[in-house]
Amino acid sequence: MIIAIILLSIALITSMFFCIRFALTVLRVQEAIEESLDIIDVKYSRLSKILEIPIFYNSPEVKSAIQEIEDTRDALLYIANQLVDSDQEENTEEDLEQDSTNEKEKT
Image 1: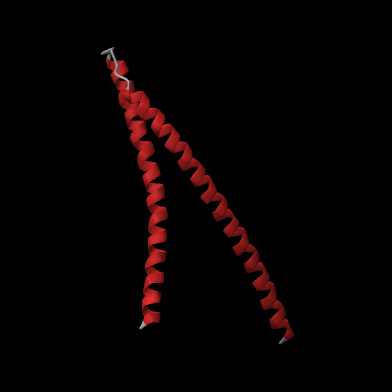
Image 2 (image 1 turned 60 degrees about the vertical axis):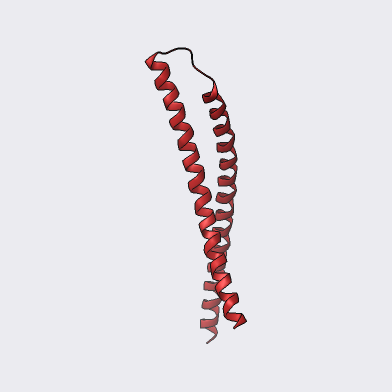
């Protein structure tokens, strides 16, 4: 019986260690994503300002460069929206679960 308790205690301590380690990794990733979103926001606004400047040169190379800048701006916006939407979906799912739990408690 004592051996089982010791083995279970060791398993518990090991699993707690890895859970805490995983939680810290998730927090670091979340902070990195938030910082990345801030950088993307700055770059997006700079690209938008650049694209507002009218071009006076009708060269195909210049037009293709402008098109690439517009595509890059749109890609940055898409990436930022995907990251924010996935975060909001997780929050929405948690809110729905809490609401259903609260409704069950009321009845």
